[in-house]
Length: 404
Ligand code: FAD
Image (cartoon, rainbow, N blue to C red; front, side, top):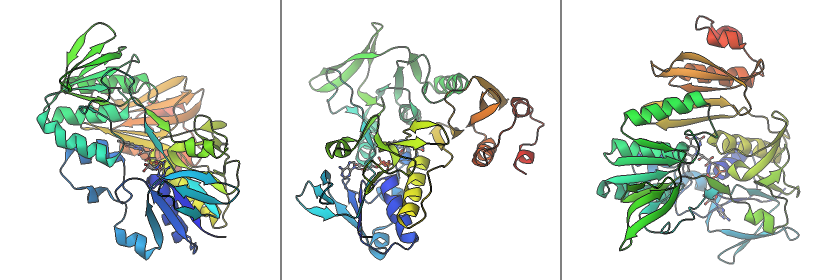
């Protein structure tokens, strides 16, 4: 019993605070926020927000009054160290906050490009609202962008830049786009769609340098000797989890802050959730670190339940989405480790799903413009059920019958 201090006011941090109050938690809650905005949703930063003209308030989870009414103290600033013995967090301002329970919801930060000229103003990243605002503001004055990295964020941005009339080149070191996250079938579909939109997708190549004149970007040189002209470079080469605060406090870290299946660190008074957490997963039999809204939000709910007396291991079903141009990709489950892919629907009709199996076990479903298949997957897998590969491939098989 006592104050809960939450470091990081992103998807996970906001949700812990809101869920604690919803569950009747009556002690002090402080949400330490190092961004100069009310807590906001990140996905639109590379989608609707950057494409449109809506103001930042369109992204906010809740207006300021919510935090006042709920007595959630939003504290502007950055946590710089944890005094575990004294149960205190030190902020950059010098202020200290006492905690009974500390939640690390520090998320992840952009992996920076280590190339000459990578710190010029025309080399941009896309993780936070200020970066999305900066890109939105300069795009109208730019004509050619090179996007480094064909992951979700790079491709979402590329599609938007093309719609806004820029010439777009995308560079990807892997032999296909989104290679770490989706099947070859889905990669190929998106490569084709982006090419149809006029985006040049270069696979198996790396940027070796960024050229500039008088501090302005003029182009990017590639590992295969080519040179692409550009007046803007956008980098989407992945993120690094923010683990330093935990590590410096002596908590075990690896590719994330190590937590058990209850999302507790080695210190029972400190938990970690969301993008920064490497959590033990009985469901998947190992440790996972996921970067998704579902993961951060469900972690937060699980932790808020534990802190209000309902202790259960984290066991939510993962899902994800990405909007690229006119296409909506939705993923149910974790599709890594599959040995067989069964397609339902048709890529030619721009609507299909890739059902990913290991043996006869359904691991996950990647759906393109097939929201019904996606929702089916979430319900089916949430029930720990499967359908056979033959059923998945058979369009006349009624998916709903598997949910009965
Ligand atoms: P975050 O939301 O990153 O929040 C962490 C916060 O902690 C940040 O504000 C950070 O500044 C702050 N912080 C860090 N250290 C400190 C400190 N020491 N003191 C105080 N504050 C600190 N996911 C999807 O599922 N679907 C999507 O379509 C999708 N699109 C995305 C598009 C973009 C452009 C980005 C960047 C991400 C997208 N994601 C998407 C991923 C999703 O947004 C993240 O998985 C989610 O935000 C993770 O929540 P989090 O709370 O763990 O971290």
